[in-house]
Length: 82
Image 1 (cartoon, rainbow, N blue to C red):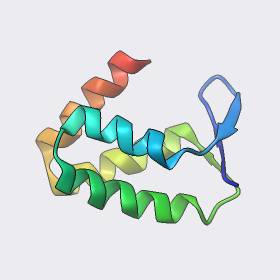
Image 2 (cartoon, rainbow, N blue to C red):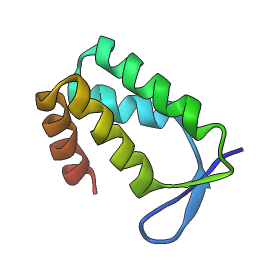
Image 3 (cartoon, rainbow, N blue to C red):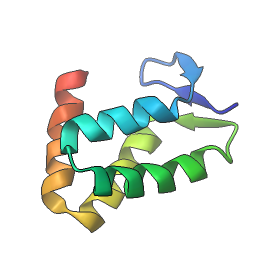
Image 4 (cartoon, rainbow, N blue to C red):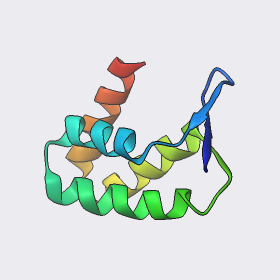
């Protein structure tokens, strides 16, 4: 099972549903959500651990390629969430 190392150093199990939900809440566009989260989830599941900051960076990178407005929306959501 993949572990996520949070910014504060704590670890937790990677949750694909948590990733999907965070993207969905920010974007409210299912076509982008499925595409972006699916690609990232596939990559993450091949790793033993992954940093939360790496997940964030990957989400933003892929969202920027799909839709800059979606990336900006997710960034705003991510800042409010923290």
